[in-house]
Length: 318
Image (cartoon, rainbow, N blue to C red):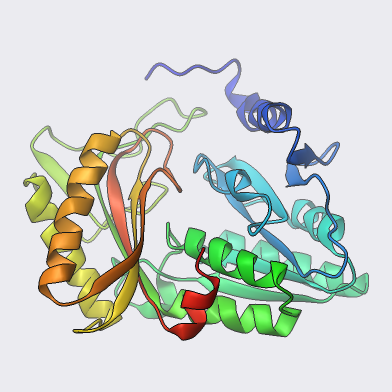
């Protein structure tokens, strides 16, 4: 696999420098740390929002720093959880005395390290709350469900809400509501290659697809013959709708997320069918998001996230 890199050991460090340089009007890097923060952080009077995880999911998470979004993002190595001391520095950088909400995807390393960072922050007198996102319905056991692209909707909705003045406890409650009101599922057509390994994470034949693959290339629910875009959309959405228990008259937000190398043309073809299915079931779409929000390096495929809306979520959905 050809990659535009210099040294596999330096890809994250060089990426962070590049992001900070390209978006210097919005973002700054904490010297010596794999942490990017909002340039004007800490925002006085506002709850801080911190998220993060392994690199390789760009634009997540640093691409969502800014007004009505995150205050800081912590980057681990590729597909590797960030260390607790890195997370702590992000917490300290954005705390204005109103506390910090940590938005964490449900992976054992992320959960453990964010927990440790929260304990370290408490020792320094900083209040934190956490939400652990578990939106991937490809995993049957709900407690083990992975946090995937739906995490971006938590960033967006809670980010807007804390800008409008929600306190830490209210922000945490809203984050849990968003997380509990959405479900996601993906399909992969080709694997990605971690720079340090130089080898694809898994293999698929030309006529195969993997349903329910994780954002790090983890195995999905089933490997089967490749189908048409409409047929794949029907299969994914059927599972997501059933898990979310949406019904006639419900209002939703839909996120079609590219995994890294799927053209927008194909993502819009998938969304077209998804809206058709929802309309046939008398389910309306208030907001549609189509594009790359949480990728898996150059993996080919996409995921669907469906968020069931109510008056509270509607209020803060930008």
